[in-house]
Length: 273
Ligand SMILES: NC(=O)c1ccc[n+]([C@@H]2O[C@H](COP(=O)([O-])OP(=O)(O)OC[C@H]3O[C@@H](n4cnc5c(N)ncnc54)[C@H](OP(=O)(O)O)[C@@H]3O)[C@@H](O)[C@H]2O)c1
Image 1 (tube, rainbow, N blue to C red):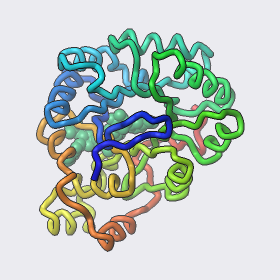
Image 2: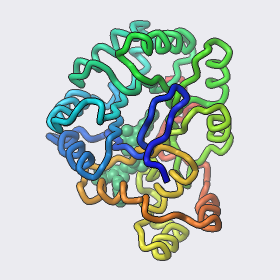
Image 3: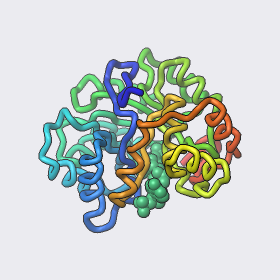
């Protein structure tokens, strides 16, 4: 299996990255980035909402590696979208991250009343060189269709909650049919399902951990995954999913775990935040 995928705008993105939400203890993001880089991660996922862009910027700088080796994502929060100053929000993030550009800038949550304008501005920003790729998060099919109506440019990525206990088949299929890559957030289901009997059985069968079974199931479905950890051994283990492959019947067994139950409190279908 390839460790990168090519997005609809030609950019290459690693299929595994480090999630950085709640990596906000002293030195936590900096250390996690170092562990992750050493374990082979090149994709780092933050957001202005995570209030750790300065720490992430420090962590990336401390790696001392060429900028082109890294794929850095950040996101614009809802109040920044409502302010109308999208470029100002991006500039603030870039300053905190100590970067000239981000590899991917994403709408963190769609805001109904200004969604069209924000998307048009994202498209404009892609032309400035401050952003390589533009994407969205938490977008339902309806929001994606809205973009198709108003813009020639589709998001390269839709980052949505995705794990065996919550898998939106229709949204994933729609994205994949339209060449929008799906990036799974909370890919470990925030560890609420690690003792599920299906995962326990498959972990035993493949000699892998339950977390690795989940992540492997996701990448075999063509998803990009961004598990979060601040612990070195977990960061390493979460990336060690490319030396085995789940058989079809085991993929289906994990499919059967879907309870359509989110682990995050907010539901983009009903929440306008
Ligand atoms: N766009 C959005 O709206 C959105 C929403 C949520 C998340 N995200 C992104 O997605 C990333 C991942 O999602 P998430 O952080 O919500 O949840 P997650 O990655 O599913 O789970 C993270 C939790 O699992 C633990 N963990 C990690 N690896 C483990 C392992 N191998 N075994 C046991 N426990 C393990 C972590 O603890 P330790 O740190 O102690 O290891 C942490 O408590 C975020 O960090 C963020 O970048 C985006």
